[in-house]
Every structure is written in structure tokens, then in C-alpha cells.
Amino acid sequence: MQIYLPIAEMTVDPLVILAMGGLVGLLSGMLGIGGGFLMTPLLIFVGVPPTVAVATQSNQLVAASVSGVIAHWRRRNVDFKLGSIMLVGGALGSMVGVALFARLKALGQIDLVISLTYVLFLGTVAALMMVDNFRVLVLRRNVKIRRKLHEHGALHRLPLRMRFPRSRLYISAFLPLAIGFVGGLMVALMGIGGGFALVPAMIYILGMPVGLVAGTSLFQIIFTTGITTFLQAVTTHAVDIVLALILIIGGVVGAQIGTRLSHLLHPDYARLMHALVVFVVAVKMAFDLFATPEHLFSVTMPTQ
Amino acid sequence: MRRTARIAALILWITATVATSARAQSLAADLSSHVIGITTGFAGADLVLFGSADRQGDVAVVVRGPPTTIVVRRKTRILGVWLNGRSATFRDAPSFYEAAATKPLTEIATPETLVRYGIGLDNLRFQLTETTDPTEFSPFRAALLRAQERTDLYRPDLARVSFLGEHLFRADIVFPANLPTGDYTVEVVLLSGGQVISAQTTPLIVSRVGFSNGVFAVAHHHSVLYGTGALALAIAAGWAAGAIFRRM
Image (tube, rainbow over all chains, first blue to last red):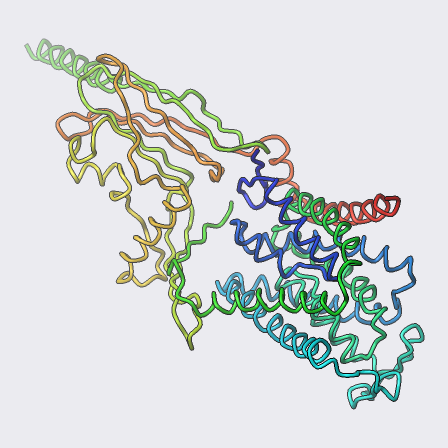
């Protein structure tokens, strides 16, 4: 069976797209991540133009984060106040990102920027997570030597300090604002929610309780991906609603199965698996940047 | 006497005109359909071109997609990283190209004729925009042809036009699933002794129809509505997924 994607202007096998959505959803459910960083490269791999892949992926992430937040909200694991501050930064970030995206596309360097940002973010996050995992799993070091609830770094004492009762934090509002901004940029430029980078940032930079991190980051991802979807639809016309729908169906089913399977996996190993998946994607992207390309010339034909 | 000469000249002229128009009509061809509709299930199309030629000769068919601007970029290595470097912009290049003939092209026409009528991929002429360096033309042209062949938009292999009996001929034209939309032309030429003796152009329209056309039109002409719809769909789907799976 073949189906024509009206915006990507290509024919795909819907079962392949469903399987991709399901696989990424399964991983995201098991590891508690959005999985956008896996989906965008996969879509490009099956021939979807990078612009359509990024824009459509943001639409799919709206659905994934809505269903994720509902689950976390029931368990009261969302800090709405902190999430809202991040959201302001995120909105700004996605607006800057979409404008940058259009500009880079006109210059013909959008593919390079997508790859470079992937390598940069994924590489850094993978390295940090691997170091952390190594400490926990191999050295079995006792990490319960915390004297306080969390460390107060110099960053926390920046001006505009606010209280976040749900997270039991008293920190500068600039921090969640900045983290949100980076998240918004990532949604627009890479078509990913950025959860894989936001979650560690919220734990290590903000010092948030781990239990609240996933729900709160997803809460702000709903809005950054939502704003990005809308802006992409209006400026680049690259959101393919048919492709998004197939991805959503595959993704939610996979995510639900993944969530149920996640109980079988020890959290330490889940984190290690997460780090490895991020690492593999980063290495693949870096390799593609430096390796001699199969085709030296690329051709762009504007769609009428 | 002068009057008779005038009448004789007139008769001669009329005969000549009738003869030319008869020669122009020595070729007639048509497609099995003038419209290719791209539906949601579109997986390519096959059309049959049939026609008749009153005179002996060879037939060539050229299918061209709507002319478009194509940008070809060459990757260069800077600090070990491959990125897009120089580019060439081709104006009015066919977005789709396919040729068919009764025999190999070199056997049916002179090289000049092939170039003049643009029969065969090697004989296509391209125009560069003013901003592009003309010395870099040929590698970019070759790259453009290769890339379009890879995506099936230019057909490198000549399709067959076959004669059924003495006058009647047919050609099967295959269109891929990634067919660009727009107004196509199908040019049929009758060749004899290496020269074109008759030619006919038939229009062909490729357009999205039904659901996929609706989606494309809304996305481009009512993008605010489209964006809102895409969001509503995603939120509803996420909500529904949460609700359905909670009960399981």
C-alpha cells in the first residue's frame, strides 16, 4: 500500500511510517523522552525533505507531549509555575528559531545547521549522561552525601529571584527562562522537543526534584512545539498533516506499550540505554558531517 | 494576358498552401488521457500515446514538465566539515523529462535537429541565471542531470515508440509517483531523412485532486487555518490517547 503525502509531495508506505512512529514511541515510553531526535533523522532517511521532517515532527510532538502531561498531571508531577516561566523563554526561542530556519534555508545551509546542532547537543548530553552512569553503575559510589536539598550555585543568585513552592526552589527566574529559550530554539531548528537536553539541565542546573522534571519539561514542550507548528505552517508551509497523523498513531501506541515495559527495566539501566541511544545518533551525525558525501552536488527544485 | 498569369499564380499558390497543410496534417497523435490526477493513493501513472503518420518516417515523443528554476549546490570541505559551497541556478529547466522514439536517436535525426527540438537528455539546453559563473556550467549541468535521473524525474533510457502496421504508432509513457504538478507538454515529431517534417504538441495537466489537493490548497492559501487545524488535531489525538489507554 502506498499513500501520497500532500506537503512532502512524495509517496510512502504508511506501514513503514507507522512502524517508525511505534519504535520511537516505544523507546520514548520506556526512557521517558520525546524521541524527536531519533524521528527527524529517520524521516530524512526515508526521503522526506528535511524542512518537512522538522516542521511535521513538531506537530507530532504536540500530541505526544499532551498525552504525556495528562499522565504526569494525574500524579501531580507538574510544576506549573516553573513550567510557565520556561514557557516564556521557549516561546521566544521558537520564534527566533523559526525566523533563523527560514533565513538559513534561503542561504542553503539549513542541512549543515541541523546536523551541527544535533552533534553539539546530542554529543554534550550523551557525554554528561555516560559519565553520570559510569559513576552510578561501575563505581557504585554512594551518592547520598548531599547535605542540602540541592546546591546553590552562583547562577541561582542572579537577579529576579523567585520562589517555586512545588519544586521547593528559590532561584533567579533567568535560569528557567534561558533553559526554555534553548528548548524553543531546538524545537524550531531540529524538530525535537528537546526533552533529552532539558531534563538534565533542569536536574543539574536548576536542581529540581527529579520526579517533577519530566512532567514540567513536557508541559513547556506542548507550547514550544505548538507555537513552532503554527509558525512553520504559516511561514514555510512545511507541516504535512497526513504524515503527522500517521506518526501520531504509531507514536502513541508505541509510547503506551513502552510505558508499561519500563517497569521491567531498572532506572539505572534505562538511563544508560538512553545515553547510548543519544550517543549513537550523535556519532552517526558527526560521521556524516566529516565523511565524504556520496553525492557532492545537491539539487533543490522549489515546489510551486 | 497579364490577367491569366495572375490567375495562374493564384491557382499555384492555393495548390501549394493545400499541399503544405496536408503535409502538416500527415501526423496526428493523442494521449489516452490529458489529465493525471494525484490522489492520496497515487503511485505513478501510465499513459498511452497513439497516433498515425501518413508518411514513412520515424517518430519521437518528448514529455516535458512545467519549466522551473533549479538550484544545484556543490559541497566543499571547510575545516574537515562538508558544507554547501558554490551553486548554479538553472532557469526554465523542465521539472520532468522523458523521451521516446522508434529507433536510437542518432539513427533518426542529425545532432542539430536533436538539439533544436531538445530530443534526448544529452540534447537538452539549459539556461543559467546571470548570477552564475558560466565557466562552471558543465559540471553543474551534469550534476543536475544525474540528480534528476536518481529521483526518476528525468528518464535516461529512451522509451519505445512502436509502429503497428504502416501508419499507426503507439508509445507507453510511464510517470513516477513523485511527479511534479503543473502543465506538461507532449511533443510528437515525425522525422524523415534526419529532418523534422511534421510536429504536434499535446497538453497534459498533472494536478492534485480530491483530499490531497484540499490539504495542499489549505496549507498554502489558508495557512493560519491549516496551522490551527494541525494543532487541534494533535491536541485531540494526544488527549484521546491518554483517555483510551487509561482504561486499559
